[in-house]
Length: 125
Image (cartoon, rainbow, N blue to C red; front, side):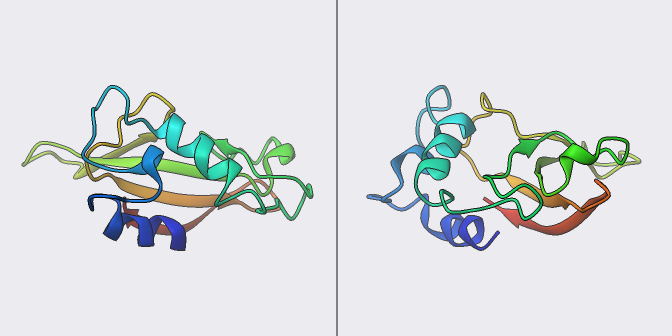
């Protein structure tokens, strides 16, 4: 979460060091998949799932019926709905094809030992 917060403040600056995660680029080539691949090879390479001892996976949702999901990461994009809607926002999984050329609102959670979602924080990226 701290990396995403720090990157949010810097990724639209000219000369941002992490090119695959830079903002303001071409929406067709500036994607979450390219950014995540870079992060898993560099910034996040030492992250470990405490329940499995290996790198955590980014999954769509926690499911208490599936204990193999313990310690996995849920990263959702939060999109506003039109003014006057009964629900102010909707969430969906951040998929590799999603463009990151503009600012995104993200919600990060972790699946606990029972594979229940524990919301960690919301961040603008």
